[in-house]
Each structure stands twice: as structure tokens, then as C-alpha cells.
Image 1: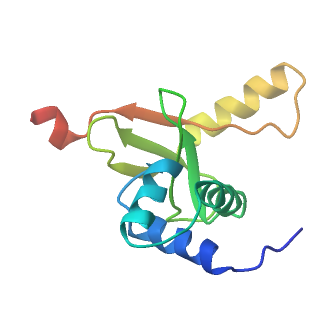
Image 2 (image 1 turned 45 degrees about the vertical axis):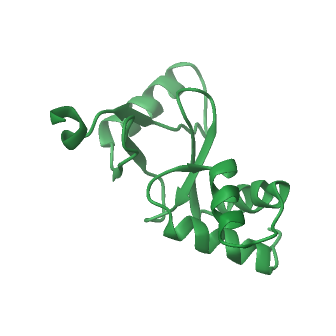
Length: 130
């Protein structure tokens, strides 16, 4: 495993991600950093976010539009998300039935060491009643 050194840019991205609510794109995070006076480059933000996601310090998912989104990871280990399409509220969930189903489908087709990502997009209670 390669250990990335903790540069000021990486720390700035980590802190900005920690202070963001819900998932955010690299472009959105870059804009927040620039608005706060940072001179960090967009490519550096992308690299730092990818590294944080690989190391389990950030959750990463693809929006329904195909854009990569990130947020500071609240828990360690495998988990899934419920995400409000309107306000971005995100709830980490356990999904035992999904885990069992994924293992069974993989085994049925001769796959081993199968991995999966499940993110459920909908409207939270507050947005549903608004």
C-alpha cells in the first residue's frame, strides 16, 4: 500500500469536505476553496478526493446524471446510502438483504470476491411534504 503524504492541499480538501453538507462534486468543492481564498488547482482537488475515497476517508458515488460526488465518510466499512434528490440529505444505511442478494447472484453465476455499490435516490421526508 502506498501512503500518500499529507500536503497542505490534501488537508485543505479534507477540511472543506468535512465542512460540506451532503455530497459535493469536485468542481463544487474547488469553488468553495477558491471562494475562501485558496489557490488550489482543480486537478489537485480531483486527485485529493480520489485518494481520500480510496483510503476510506470519503464516500464517493455517481449522481443519476453521472457526475462523481464526494462527502466525508461518517463510518468505516462497507455501507450504503439513502440520498435525497432535492436537498442532498444523506443517510448511511446497513442493507443485509442487499448483501445476501449480491453474494447469491454472484455465486449463481460463478463469481467470487464480488463487490457492489448501492445508493438509493429519493425524496427525504421534509422534501416530500414541501
